Length: 363
Image 1: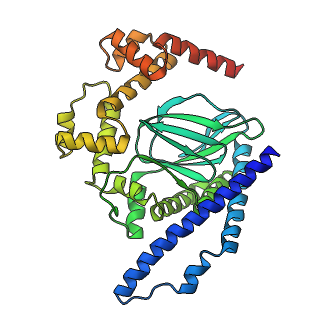
Image 2 (image 1 turned 90 degrees about the vertical axis):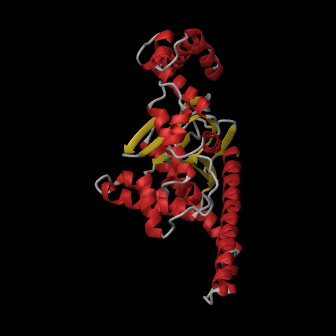
Image 3 (image 1 turned 30 degrees about the vertical axis):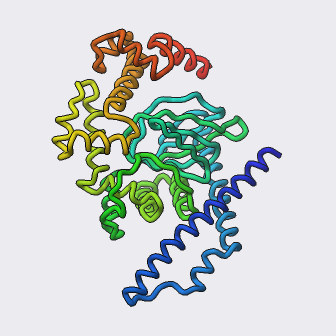
């Protein structure tokens, strides 16, 4: 009964999402038709506009979307039968979890993320982003984030996919589609959640079907990925993608700064030098950096350092002092305070807790 109610709720969510997409597309059409009339062009007919809001059509689209979601669940569950992550095709990662998780610190990157079943929450700075099968998440920069799986159970495990995107590909599709510049020059946050419309979901399902035909995947996966990028560029996240591909935009320059900070995180932070190299004032750099990342450059560097120190202690067996020194902390006490502030426990206790959790999971 609970599963049936959840499916009905999801179906209703998709209908609402589709109505939102229809409204959004009709609004864009109205603006386009108005501009065409001013230029002497021919707009859409009144009947064409009305047909797009036909409740029966919306209902059919919702059922089609539900069928695609069901297929996505079945195919991902068949590919990854145990909890964990796999990368069956280069750039495509699948994730399965049979229970909700604690908050996990990690790094985002330029990627398109879809949940087939369950839900997840991502924290960037002070902003929370929750998504589910009716929504997708788009990340456009490498940022320290905290993520947590909210809905998952052995009967209905959390199932998701993440498709890594290439800025060069985004730029190529932009040019071919004739969308050269962002419609807005304002900064855009590097993470956002939007409704997953039927056409985008259909492309995702076709991508997952390639897992059954590995010989075709090298030829068809690039084509489907281009289609996904195209549909993202045509949707409400278009500016978010365009900003990262347009040379000279504030977001593009901040992305360049992020890449540098990720590579040189152990070095002292010299904002003046970075701002000058990017052709920005120091105050302008601070403003645009926080607009994109939801944190200051110092907060960003601190999170990168502490996550790397945690990895060194877990993966390479370094003690706290050595790990702190390796990532740029000369004061062990200062390192321990900052570490506890981010992860909730002092370094040694946190590492012991993580290792114990790994042993329990393996057992």
